[in-house]
Picture 1 (cartoon, helix red, strand yellow):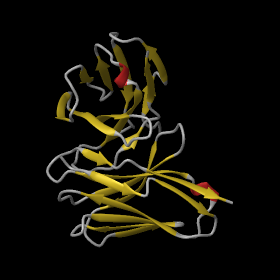
Picture 2 (cartoon, each protein chain N blue to C red):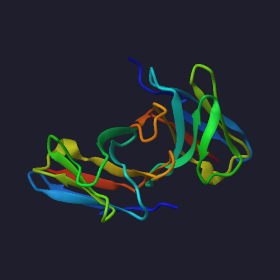
Picture 3 (cartoon, helix red, strand yellow):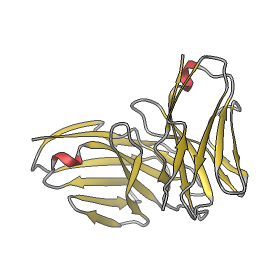
Picture 4 (cartoon, each protein chain N blue to C red):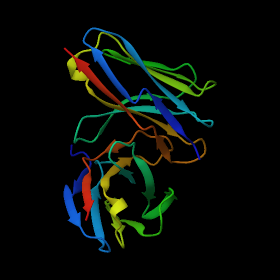
Length: 113
Length: 111
């Protein structure tokens, strides 16, 4: 049973560019959440997708957007990259019920130069 | 906004010793989670605590929850090197789906 898979594992971009990160949830899961983890910090919630819609959003600017596909996979898009966007981006999948345990992928390490 | 504080942030302990990591949170919640993260790796779920007074144990780790005090503890018994990692607590906001993570406790177990 495949767990949560993310791609790519590493990315290097320059300021102002745009990036797309991808996530496939664990088999049987229908909800995908995205988190940003800066170095030495805990993960911060970006948003959650369920039934192809953004169900909840954290305190992130509109430069961060996402999408969920009918097969439950998801993308995170970040426009107009800033140096401060450099972080590990984690995708977590779960079942839709509130409070279900999150299963995390290995993350995408984004470096913005 | 819900705030989650962990202490200590860094913990260096000798093998065989006991210690406790504390997780305080600022507003009402009914669910608390503990995760482990090894360097360069993702987060692995350790415990899910769903009610006041809940206690869960797995090997040398035991987690508890006091919702009235808004406090959870992760107790390490007779530490071994394999427990070296960063431990995070995460709190689910009471009415939504957002998890709030603490800043983590970096644990190093010294032989």
